[in-house]
Length: 291
Image (cartoon, rainbow, N blue to C red; front, top):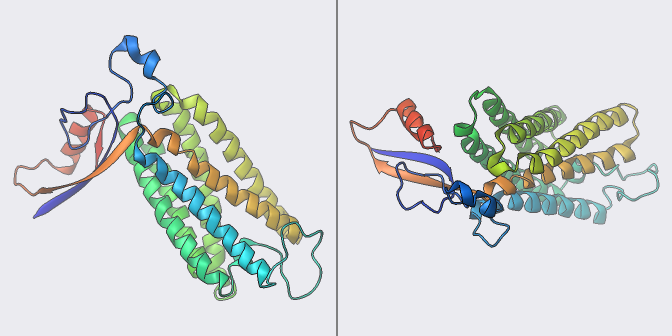
């Protein structure tokens, strides 16, 4: 039998002697007198981890995909453009994302984009959890962030696979999961950023995340208020702004991911192999994490 473990670590100049499957590789040397020179790892010519591109790919791919859906729907005269002066009665609808991706061919692209976005968001959520696991004393906040992002990812699949006209109830459940738990996850991650303070960059990236989380919360509130008052053109514009803020928020994880690398290690099962809890305890001792 073989045992597969996924582990995450930050990247170090002393990485040649690994005590566990993945060890923390620092872009800075361990000598305290040199910390101030190398603390800007990745910004002063040092090599960054390729994992930093994962959040960026998620942000760019999803935003590009959604705008393609929008332009297809506008070209097919299904929705008004976002810069339309006002909504006029007729066959066209307000440019909500769900309405833009409601009918073929836009719905085909929309489903694919949302499924891929959900998968990438889930991967980012798990890697972020592994990254913070050995650095937080009380795990409840980190676990809550993981659960919230997983539920938001699940909501994305419902949005993409159950179009508005086909099953409005399930589609609205997906909207609530994505916006609701997505907003909660943003606040949790902002708090974790300031608390953990990876590479002394907590405030530098934490403050923008707080601003983005506040913007997302404001957009969610305004969106539902405008929807209730049936001011659909403004509600649709707010919705697009809300989604772009979400995507920008995910892109900020590249700042911390540039310090880390992740591996999947497959090893043959042995009878004296450490238990799961023992493995985590040993890994935490060296500031790594294994699942």
